[in-house]
Length: 470
Image (cartoon, rainbow, N blue to C red; front, side):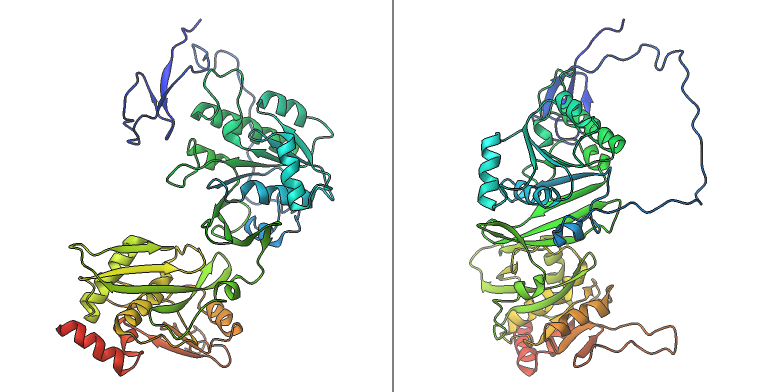
């Protein structure tokens, strides 16, 4: 019989070590080692017993598309790719108190009208779950509640003919298997518990949703392999000071990734926002310098948001660069391009950048909108309030085209914008003509970022020259 040994497993990356160390050699994390006893292995691998031969099939064949089950919450269905797929596994992560349990209880209550739904919590008692349901007005929904943490008991309950078709596990870090010596929440427990639940869901054909805790860096706690095991990974984003919540899909085997759903946090729970662009621009003041409207894309949805910039004299040796909702490294790159290619000086000033509404922008198409807001802030000339801006800026100062230009322009025209500052569009293959813009909208196509400064008029050019020459 093989001798049982212990190993030290990093709780950040899952790397195994023979002895304890203060720092993990694989990921560099400090004080992340935990002692675990691995499961007993067969001394000679698979042994003498032979496995069954598997059958291969070709790529071409008749396969029906997986059926979808709509929850009735359009924003949640959009993020999932058009509804839930039976036998799929979803992983939902987010900061504490952001609304993960709230939205999943609302989804379970909506689905429970037509199918069996179960909500299993390892963090709250039955009375606490009922209290939340009463606050949300869902206490009459036929959702089955349970407070359990043993994976063995949960699988014995769900592996039955009358098992529910939709199951929420809140959270996977509280689940444990009694045949592992490690504590709940460790790498071995999280990986094995998730593997057993996902395997059962695919065998029985029900949908399982795993709620995952996040680390201080914003990543889902536990092994990274957990995100590879599930079919869909959803992140809940948003600032607690804002009422908006963004449900973003970063992985989806049954639909497009980077899709988002917008919710508004109220006393009655999370309410879906059908037209987020109008909501993000509701409090916008168009006659203020340093502000521009960016026409972006979040998955397949066009999204218009306001980008605000403020430039103030700095008394520090190293001026401050504060960014909320965008990439700080990309702001530094854009400031360097504006200084080298446009003559604008930011070396002695603090630069503050904010994306209004709590939305986080990740696509490079926001470069030109940020450049317009920075040029407007340094010159004091407002961006025309009826204009939207989008485009990618390169290090040489060129403005590069972005995808879904027509969709961005149509969304802007629908909200009443009459002008767009955009990269030069490519001509069609047929006829060599550029596609026309939306009716009633003037599209100003630019090739270099220094043209943005000149679009603000002579006052902006004089201000740039004054900054350039001191």
